[in-house]
Length: 171
Image (cartoon, rainbow, N blue to C red; front, side, top):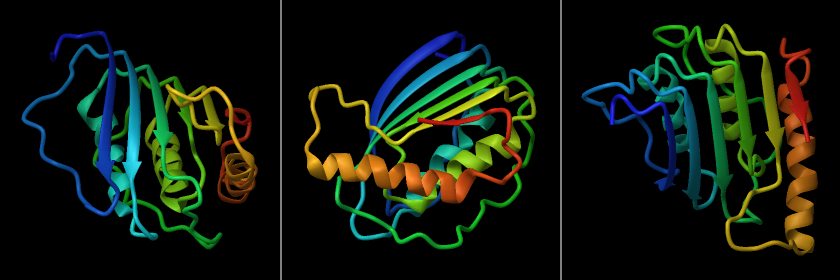
């Protein structure tokens, strides 16, 4: 698997479990990663989401990263000052595009986005879309509509004015 140039993975993570598992190797040729993540979260214990920060360290030549997040609608953290991850051990010099969908509800989604933006020195385009890209539902109800609206508000609150002008698009 270390030599795969493009990879699409679906997985679920428990957002309550912090830390990043040690990986015995790296994806040395991975240039495009599409990761669909079902975020299993209860309450506001979501530090486990930050485990996804290690993706850049595991993929040194990654150019395109797509994170499609799906978390329970109706679970919200209040807008507050967000903490940042400690500085990355190493910078990433190849990532050009970052697309994150389903970004609403949890402040740690925005901590993760800021971490990628600060770590990826060649980043040209960052798209944050609060609408979840569900694989099985084509419509959304009023609760989901409110989640998308709230996600836009949170994205503007947490990401605007943080040095991302020119590369950041919030859908």
